[in-house]
Length: 287
Ligand code: GLU
Image (cartoon, rainbow, N blue to C red; front, side, top):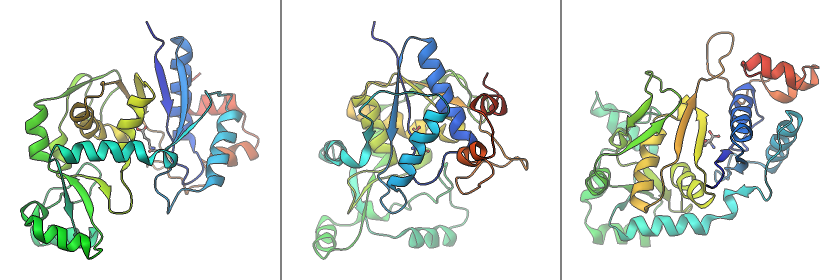
């Protein structure tokens, strides 16, 4: 049997905080306990927010925590071709369509139709107009250089895969555990790529987890419902389903989710203040 493969996959758009420490340490400890491998993956496809200095800081903070990982580190920005291929496969299956509305336009349409459902991230679902646009009109707008998002035709996709599940060894926001039924419809016609970027968070994660042979996905419970969409993409692309473990979040004194912009819970600030890696483990309840 091959050893299990775990990964910590931060986006270098800010400094790591205690919540990241919990994810990284859980992955590292579980990998070690199982005689498995631990990978670091840099999810830097958002070129407007990601910066090399944050990536350097992430590595420094993780080393300080006592973690070690395999080389080379996969940087998503260097693998756009792999994501483009996956996008093209979904497109060849007739599952993608270009949608030309901006986020603001979709938000406006949603307000007009209140109550209008939102996806698990809180963004209004796509109202579906792009699907009925004649092919000629789509081609004309693309040729004219209009920006667009490539969205998945969710009903078509779900009809192709049938019902999907995943195995959860952690806990969802409503206590979900064991075999969980995926609900990709909750995401509507989700964006999988854009005119100037052949991928999205969901598509690259699924492609990378498969290419890197990741067997165990351990991450915060805020990503629990993302698993529904990711399972759908795995099924459509014929990729294996990893095991999932969603863990509790580290909250601030007011019970809110930590943010990369808060200094007081940033690992480097705590380090500067003299906190030790052992004390960090105690603070997040992993000893
Ligand atoms: N890059 C994502 C984040 O920083 C995590 C992706 C994942 O663990 O699936 O939130």
